[in-house]
Length: 148
Image 1: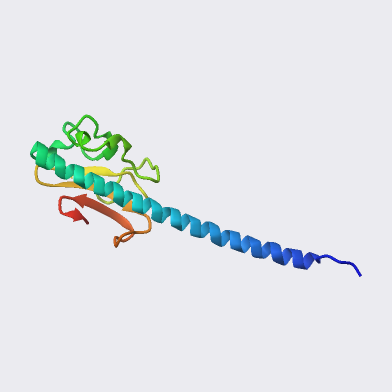
Image 2: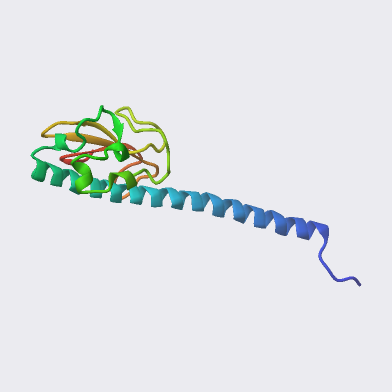
């Protein structure tokens, strides 16, 4: 009597391993998206603190990106009042995308964008892939009243 596995048994084991691998990849991608959302909200928290500091120290939110034509990617707001309080060149969407978020927003990640600002208000758009910390998936904006 020969010992060993039949071809059918080996194929069943390979199929099971393939299914488990597919499930693991899907779960990993979801976990990565949630991690990027958490990073986005952390960045937005830092930006909010910096914008409030600009308002208090410089006399208005409009001092954050002086001389820039809106809308602009936040990281291009260099040489401005905002950069005194946060390193804007390092504040980019963690998905490393080139598309700028705009008022209509998109259905996929986009880079943080300053869409409007005045002495009393501002709007910085961002996108959450899966949603995090009570915020739903989709386009959101930071303004002087919080996150919308």
